[in-house]
Every structure is written in C-alpha cells, then in structure tokens.
Image (cartoon, rainbow, N blue to C red; front, side, top):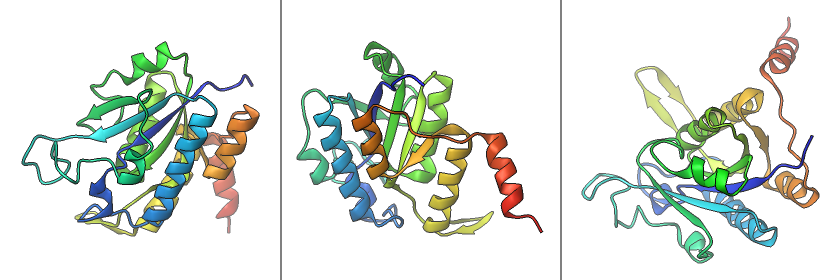
Length: 211
C-alpha cells in the first residue's frame, strides 16, 4: 500500500460543544479536546495540511450564530492557530457540502483525510461518508471526537452507545478508525491505518453473535 498523503480536518471544535444543549457527553469532552490539540501539534511537526472547520449559521440563530461566543473556536484551538491553516465555514453536516474543501485538498495532493472534532453522530459521520464521493480515504480519531445523548420519536440512545456503534459502523466501510496514539504512530511511520470492509465485518459479526 502506498504512503497516504494526509490532511488533518478539525471539525467544529467550537464553544457550542462545551456548554448548553450540544455539550459533548462521550468521550469526555476535555479529554477529546486534548487529543485534538495533540493531533494538531503532530500535524505541525510533520507538515501535514490542516483544515479547521466552523459551523456557521446566520446571526440570531439559536446555535452557531455567526460572531457569537458559541460559534467561536474553543480557546485551546484558537491558541494554536496558524496562518497556514485552511479555514472552512459550513452550513451543512458534511465538510464537503457547499464548500471548496474537495478542490483545495486536490491542490495539496491529499488522498486521505483524518477527521477529529465534533460531533461523531452528525458532522463527523457525514464528512467520512462524503469523503468517499470525492475520492478521498478517511480516518476517524475515536478519542478526538464525541457524541451527545439523543432521544426522539424513534427512541433514545446514550452518547456512549451512539459513539461506540458509529465507530464500528465507520470502520466497517467508510473510514479507518483509530486512537490518536495509533494515528500518531502511523503518521511517524508513513503507513496507512488498517480498515475493515463490510463483508469481513459482516462475517465477524455473525460469528460474534452466533448461538
């Protein structure tokens, strides 16, 4: 397998996810934030392209309103900000939807995106799925992402259940899922992360739940 040409995509690490109804519940948001910071530092050390994405809605919106405190990057991310970072503003779940990110990545000769940030259950999974359409391999950092509790007419699910299920789902087809430690080792060695496939995951699933 050829050496991946990675870019780190930091998705929506904004204050909105640290206070109010969208607070990340699992993994612990402060630990997840620390892993995002570590990933940014490693990307700088290895000259990886970095993309920082912000969700932005019109002024007066209940969340992510342009210019609001919730819209701003978390201070730990803002403190690391560099002029070389690609800044992306989005209004939809996927980082690719109605943005110039795909074309910018092609200009950087990137073939693999590494996703860190929030939320596992919305923008992260949408971006990993969207990467396939644009011809990019995807990686997701399991401990540098996070989910929220959900309940609606279809039922309810805890953030921990949701996050864990989506990591298995992503690894089965859409992305290579790894901890920040494992990703750091792969970056240093120039190797790709291992990813399963739907057939293999299905057979292993049948075996795991047989009987």
